[in-house]
Image (cartoon, rainbow, N blue to C red; front, side, top):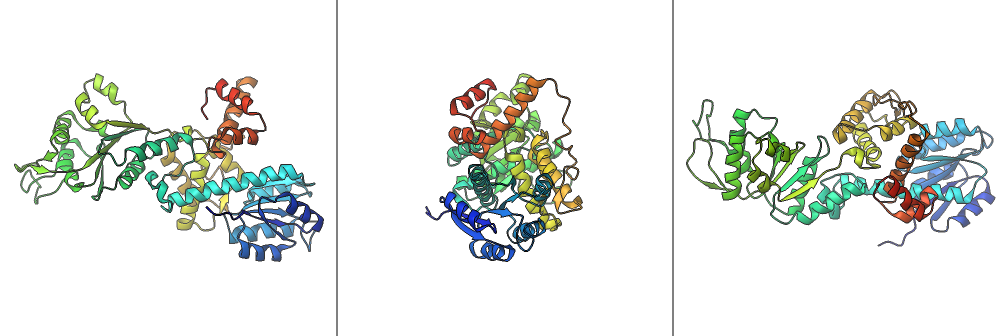
Length: 452
């Protein structure tokens, strides 16, 4: 592990304040610059993770234009830099403009070393999380490839990933339960990659294929087996020889075909439609559904013996609303991807967009978020995606409030989820972020029946 300190660039023309800040942040490698040109040179040379930027820079120390020009230049060269803007001029107007322009945060002068230190620390922490998730998305972190590119820091989703890692090398059937759009196929692919099986990952959506064609899709057919069967065709099960067969929406398989699937699982041989030859197939079965299979068993719409063959290991996948902090992180990932492909002029989010993303319940889960982000990037008029581009209400336009107690509880829950997400479930770190003691944090978690 490298002992290199994280790099912090301080853009400040007051030499006394430069020295004070350099002394205060001894945990970082501090680089200082007194104007825009020096700041850009330092950015190119050192590539700092976090920048503190005074808006009052020469040749306009009493204004903000030079500072905002420096902000634009920094983000144009290195968009993932966390820039913390400082100003004593027109604080509210400057703050709104800075955040809209892509700054990570804003603080008003005079400088409070302790307060600024907390903001800087959070910026480094968030940058580390985002960097890790970019590596996950690009497959650049072998130890986390089990996620199949899944981007998350939510403890609930990390628990799912650990379960998959534990069962990946065991030849057991896995059932993934979760609402539509939660990433079941992505996790199934991750399980296949982690299993080391040499064959293909073959997926079939059982709900998307007409009932009279599903058997042929699964088991294949011989030439002449039925009208239109002009050649012998392998089914999905055969195609998954030596690999993994993913049966999505397995609850939609009709009862007669459930019997044939059960026989294959028990005997590990198939016969194509119209054929008499027994064909052995070695494939691992992973299935998924959003339906309540136990209720379907009670209604005799799903075979109990097949269920227990398919559900040797059951993994429940949380909804996006149950993954604190992931919606905003995923939105940033999708923005980067879609902007590169469709609209390079888009570089970030307006403040109301991130607030709206955080407030929305995401009934369609990750699939809904991805679709909204794609549309927003295409439709955005400016550099920043807005809540209107996402077709979401601004977070300020909240539903009618019931009473003060309900408002307090909602605010407390939101703050707790964010703090725990940012500290990856670390109680001491979350308590420090919230400015409360550990016992108080434990009491709040117990009061609201939340888990760390």
